[in-house]
Amino acid sequence: MDLYNETAVNVATLLQEPVGSSRSYGLHLDRLELDSDLVARDVNGELRLTRLSDEILANVTATATVGLTCLRCLEQYEQPTKTRFQEEFRIAYDVRSGAAIRSSDDDERFAITDAHELNILEPLRQELIVSLPMRPDCGDACPGPAVVSTGGNDEIDDRFAALGALLNSTNED
Ligand SMILES: [Zn+2]
Image (tube, rainbow, N blue to C red):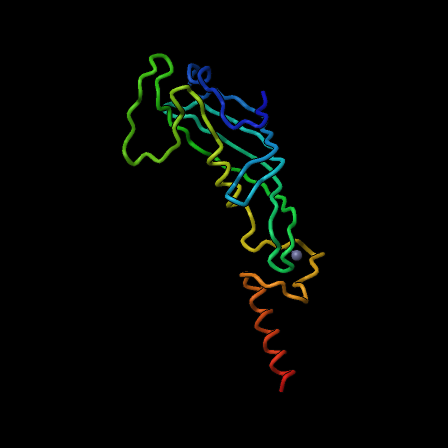
């Protein structure tokens, strides 16, 4: 069973099976929006769901490619990344009666919907963001900072602008 460009799984059958039952799915997403201007492409991995007493445990592994801006040369590059995480999904509705199951107020687990769907979109999105490097770097072949600054709000650009101003004032002397 595979998920293609889909992150929600219907777990109605799994919910009717004994504790310990599990299912595995291949995961293939062409595109996953991580943030307003951050997109993961070619997300491939595996999703394993295990039925526990009051929840379903999801084990997810995934690789992806994310377009980032290199902090040194300021060029866009493709950053390969991977993640591996576990997420608990609370059983919020009884699969036979459909009745809502109460939870404590401090329960921070994701909930399985009243249609018995479990969606890994939000945890996957968060985990992929966390997997990205704090200081994006296009690698050993990075040409380094551009000699001519194009301006802008970036920290490196500002430093070059300051250096340029300094050189100009020296030349004028
Ligand atoms: Zn670079």
